[in-house]
Picture 1 (tube, rainbow, N blue to C red):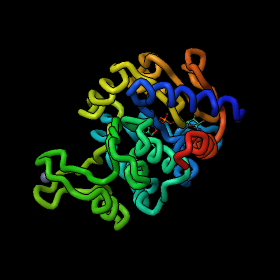
Picture 2: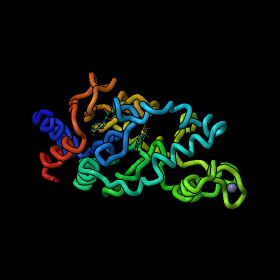
Picture 3: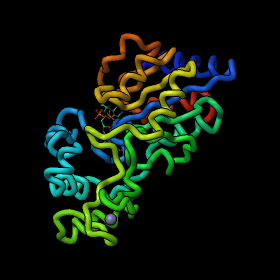
Picture 4: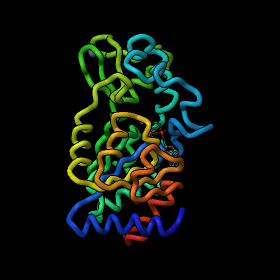
Length: 251
Ligand code: NAD
Ligand code: ZN
C-alpha cells in the first residue's frame, strides 16, 4: 500500500468536502474479514470454495431445499452478534462523523457498520437482525429461527401459523429492497464512490462502480472497475482506512 495513494484519496475526499459534497462508501464482505467473518470469493477461505451459492442462497433453494439454506445460515451466522467491528468499520464511521462520507452502502448483512457508529447505512442485501414468515409475514428475531435449527428442527417454522420462516436477507432471485433505490440515488447524485472490500462481481450493486462520477477502490484483489478508478489501493481495508482517517486528521 503506497502512502501517496492514501494521500491522493485523502485529497479527493477533501476536494468533495470543500465543494459541500460527500463521498458514498460501498462495502462488501472484505471489510469484515478482519473481524473474522469469511467473505465469499477470497481464494482458499471464501465460502464459495465450499458451497455452490445457487444451491444454498437462492429463492429456488428456499422453495426446494429450505433445510439446506437454513443449515448454512445457522452454521455461518447464528453467532454473528459475537463478531466485533474492526479498524476499517471504525474509520468509516469517523469519516462520516467528520462530514467526508454521506452514506455507507453495504452488501454485508452483519450489522458491523452500525455497531461501529455509522449512521446512514443502506443495507442493499438485507440483514441478520430478523427473519419473517413466508405465509403470514410475522417478523421474528433471526436468532429465534437459528435456535430452532440448532435445536434439531429441519427448518424454522412460524409460531402463529406453522409456515416456513425465511431470513431477511436478499437471496439470488429476490427483488432488491428499498435501500437499493436510496443507494442508487446517492450514487447518481454526482458522487465520489469509495468501494471497500468488494469483488464487484455481484449485480446489480456492482453497476454503482460504473455509474459514479469519481471512483476509488480499496480491495485486496483486482476488480473489474479498477481501470476506471481515480485511485486503486490493493491491500488490507483496516490498514488503508486507518491510514486514510489519520491522513485526514479524524483518527
Ligand atoms: P466477495 O467475497 O465477492 O469479495 C470480497 C472481496 O474483498 C474480495 O475481492 C477480496 O479480495 C477482498 N478482501 C477480502 N478481505 C479483505 C481485506 N481484509 N481488505 C481488503 N479487501 C479484502 O464479497 P462481496 O463483493 O461483498 O459480494 C458477495 C456477497 O457476499 C454480498 O452480497 C454479501 O451480502 C455477502 N457476504 C456478506 C458477508 C458479511 O455480511 N460479512 C460475508 C460473506 C458474504
Ligand atoms: Zn406465519
